[in-house]
Length: 236
Image 1: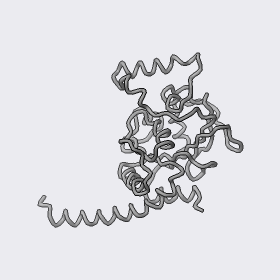
Image 2: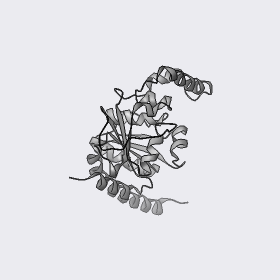
Image 3: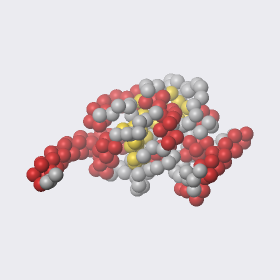
Image 4: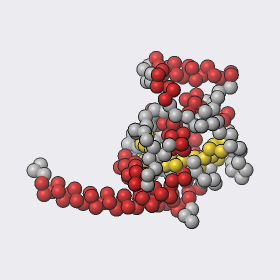
């Protein structure tokens, strides 16, 4: 059976990834044998950055309270003393016309509140991933999208916009997707202006991996074909 480390190596090699893919697992109880996160981060997607940098750990709902929007997508209720923070954050977004109030009910959420969320580089994942997040160039996201389509794992949604963290509930419940990455995520994770995201359900990773080899080879053949046509036909 292919290991998570082997999967990471193959995806990294074929896609030319500069960041490690991040495995995210939603659990019904706190795990044993995995380091519990200690400290504070300003957003849920900040944990993606830590995992991409090589850390493996799990969080509990309280670790997400600093991120009202991320708590919303993860179906984590803020404590009474902090519930105003979601209202205040959304109020700012409405005021600056970043988002409209009628858009909020359409933002995907997890089906239920997690007891714990495990984050790890894919190759080091201590549990089966619920979803795998790839921060990558658009050309790599294109290949992942084509492989996911070939593997019949794509979500029936267009490319996702803000908030980026909704890629987790979408990936778990609906299928593979791509996300442009919102300004908050870009600031908190440090991905470059040239990067975007692709997310693959953990249960479908093997199918996408198998399809990706075919897709990469097909793209190479089509690139050569297009280059030949351009050289033969284009006048400028």
